Length: 374
Image 1: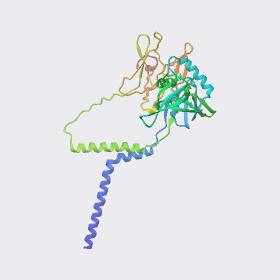
Image 2: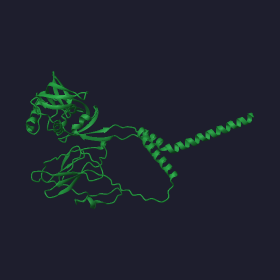
Image 3: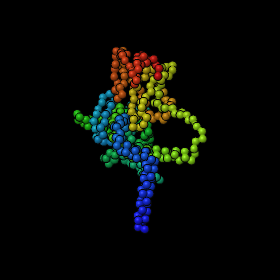
Image 4: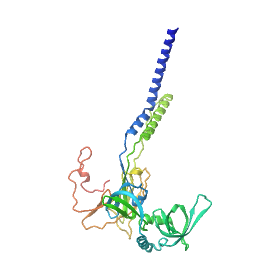
């Protein structure tokens, strides 16, 4: 009996081990993508990605961030983003008064020192807190600076209701914010940048755009989730196939149409012509950038330049800013923008001597001269 008992235990042990191994194999088969995705994501580093934003968005960037700033005069500054500081009162007052005189009649903005009456939203949605005895001290991109009890504080536009000068004139913050972004109303702040040659204080209105990189990051969680999705898909297909064996062959069509970029059409006085396909490759937010393109067809017509910005493809496009830049240059030269927005004056242009595609084929005849073929 004792010998028989030992044999039974061995059989149970062997059976239990075999069952465990079988379950492990099945689990591995149906979770292999999850495991592989986790290991791949954990071991993979994302390369630093360059991001470009408009100059007025610089306040959104974290401090102590390495930046490359392209100024409106085409200068480039590289350094660390430190902090903001106020423009000296007298200097700001002079800048603001010039803008006030220029915009008089177009939009109602307060003078420096004007009394402002504003109600501020509180946690109680049924009541407002009225702010009295505050005087205007300046603007930031998304806030108004008010002086009360000899202390200047910013109040964000969205937190204020019924803004008006004491005389009764209402303030249109939406219109004012547009003028702040285009530099037509000066900002009260300077951005302090630490460079190799020392500290530089820049008015954000002087900055055309800012370029910086996103730090590296590992993606173990993302890899696992992608792998898990693949496992679920494989398991679902396996279950459906087991319960519904195919009875006839099916034919599938792929009607996917790839997206591209916004099209810019220029009016030459008679017709619109396709003149630019801007920011190619910016297919996700982190890749957004500012493009400067030449417009070869654009001509003045009855005192205006007419452009069309169109979205003609199967995609959603986001355009933050659309400007027309005019560059004066010597006769017989051309102005060509580089990728970073700098304008270069060129003359004595020559055709390329050689051009090949990725397979080494000669394609010089396709690009040697301009033929307007896209």
